[in-house]
Amino acid sequence: MELHLAPLENVSCWAFRKVCAGATDTYTGMLSLNNLIKRNNTWKEVDTYPIAGQRQWIQIATSKETECAEFLRKLDEELKRFPEKDNVYGIQLNCSCPSPQLLRIGQGPALIKRATKVTNLVRELLKQNKWKVSVKVRLGLNLMEVQQRKIHTLLSSLATIDNPNFHGVSIHFKHAQQKSADPYDYSSLKELLSYNVPIIINGGINNAIDYVKITRGVDAKNIRGLMVGRAAIEHPDAIAAIARELYGTAFEERELTEIRRQFYENCSLHAPQPAYLEKIKKYCKWAQEL
Ligand SMILES: Cc1cc2nc3c(=O)[nH]c(=O)nc-3n(C[C@H](O)[C@H](O)[C@H](O)COP(=O)(O)O)c2cc1C
Image 1 (spheres, protein in one colour):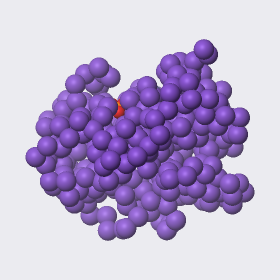
Image 2 (cartoon, rainbow, N blue to C red):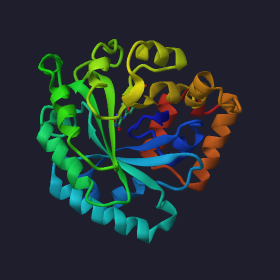
Image 3 (cartoon, protein in one colour):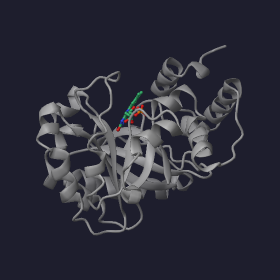
């Protein structure tokens, strides 16, 4: 099973992703395709330098097929220009970030109700055969969309994509108006797993017991993996600990001071953008000055 470190805007830079031991898949923070297409500077955030044992994803925000096509062209160019960054495993379309700026332009979770649009965007991104493509969604834009079962319509539509490079859907089990402290609602998991779409389960998973409880009694056939965000911010060994608890995978436990040392060593190799370093110091106690 895949163990994903969640995309974390202004946090999940290369130096951070590299200290998250045990993660099989990691993501850049969400990057606007409009910015990537128009501003060369934004490509600095595509910091996909090698990380042993990790498959690296770029997470994008868009609602336009034309932007997807242009992005694929530019990504190819960028990776040819900087071959040391040519470690991109896949591209994930963000349909989950609740930022009002994103919603105003019809992106992020505003797309959940637009099943055909999302399917078309994925099909556009699949017009190449180098990178996998996935989608990250929430249960709906708001409670009404959850009740209207919009995510079910979306999964039925995505199930029509017959392409081995379509990797599936990461589901953050909340709607986009819920606050970070609100409880997750996993009651629809069983049904969502009945569509023929691989699912990566996300939301409130801090350890193996959380995962076992969430998946008790469901058919695991379509579970592709789990995704962890805040627990890894708190302790970058969180995913390795889950792997050990679920599969007995051995890993070397690190003191937070050692993680801190490794993180700053990574920063000296590939410096994060200043906004990332600022956020990491704000959110990650272990990264703060001693
Ligand atoms: C600081 C921070 C930044 C985030 N940035 C993104 C992002 O860029 N793209 C995204 O899809 N989700 C983003 N999320 C949401 C996480 O990917 C994840 O879905 C959420 O934290 C729930 O998982 P958790 O309960 O394991 O933290 C962010 C969350 C946090 C805390």
